[in-house]
Image 1 (cartoon, helix red, strand yellow):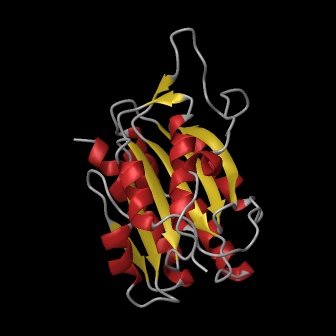
Image 2: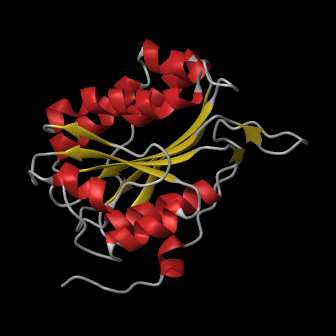
Length: 235
């Protein structure tokens, strides 16, 4: 049965993310300035089997090896972005698969791609709580050891919210913090998923939904999505 109430504080928890060992540079002047801090949230719910998770993982890794993606990052005002990867399913199941990394060129991008490609499925399968994934991701952004004017949560999913807070309520809490929420609708389970995400999940400046017709199409869709998220910073 759908849970109508959840204490946001309990869901957010305490997420300790430090610069040491995470590819982040510390200085006496404070956190490093980046053009974008982005949480890439991958669906690990019951509807996602091992092959489908692998297609997400490999597709995301491939995107960061693409020259156009690296060029877009390098062309920003500071020439770098901060990235973390989260796996999620039920309201109490979220797992950081790749902690915050700074990407400032092909070497860092290749390192990130390697870490993504090597990340096993860490989050247990469960129901689909997009709302909890949003709130958890917002907490990661709040504690990111970088400074930026742009924060984005990028949620990939093949299903609708069926556990945890109402999705629109969670969205409103997150975008009130100045965070943009974008979606990648993988249309293997729900034919109207892209409309659902547009109406109930995305929000903030320039928010959009990218569509993957199936998991085999994920690599193409996430590549386009990342370019759209990075390129508004330039020019």
